[in-house]
Length: 429
Image (cartoon, rainbow, N blue to C red; front, side, top):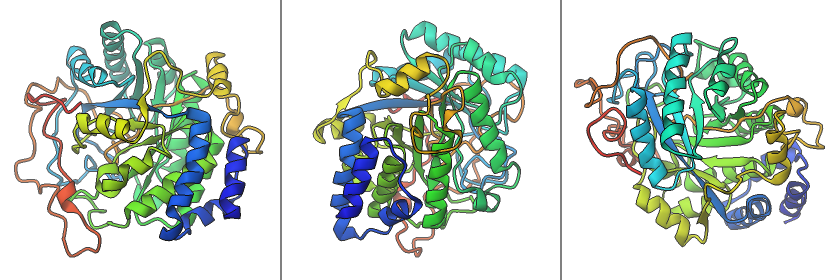
């Protein structure tokens, strides 16, 4: 297929596809799917070989969020029966992180629900970062705390944070239909603050919220302009008790086409297979490893993932290998630019007229994995999670109760997290 040959050639040169070419990937038929995966897989292997980076989420503060992001189980007004607890202590967070690191994760992603951190919250997270780094030599730490204000990114960087995550989630033109308590511009501003502080920026999207192909291409092209080092691709988990509970719009084939499009648009960037992969890719997850070079291990923020052992077996059975702690994730040209303290040096956007791709500062990090920590920050002060994770709403609807009459709905695959951080139960890693 001429389209795929053109896209491979452009990907190997780090050249931006046209919007029409990106849209054409999403419009390919199921009969062409394996050809699409094979073509995008060539680009993935050129820049990342057969390595798979493992990342592990620690939900520092669950629920209790004042934002109204429609996709999020932690949103204001959500009746999803998720764990709800306030801040983990640094030693509790370090213990939670250790489980993922023991499972092979080289990056720990620290997430907290809310609009954005107070200065006291930044102090709290800084101590947590220091505790994790002290206990686990060489581990990367990414923070995902929501909208940042002046000086906060710099303080996280000084505490040892390597990266900051803040997803764009969807296109600018439709953002107001998903969230009203903050703007698309607010999110872009936070990604740029992370860049400017010398943090590796991570910013991605959530697919499956009812968006059009044009919306998907818009947000991925916007991400390329921001030039993050890492792009997590989340697939909506339709939690009962949220406004998008009945949005079952994805098939495994469409999810693969979306991943392929992201790879073609950002060929040399860490593309991360994030929240919702088990729900929407299902038995086709191994094919996604030919497109994404990074994955979350085990559970997500508020939902359960497949067993960590199953993740590792899947990677091995598909012919890939877990990326070691001593291996640099990014291609040499991006890694060298990041080490120089001025971001990606135009990496993903290099030579393609991608606008703001040369912004100083870099970033790579978490995804709002289980369809999100919304603006992921803090809603207030207060204590620690306590052993049993304080107060799951006993009367809240369980996430598995989605109307089975919705075409394609698989509520049996949506399970609220009941183990790991904020509970007495061992984590899934």
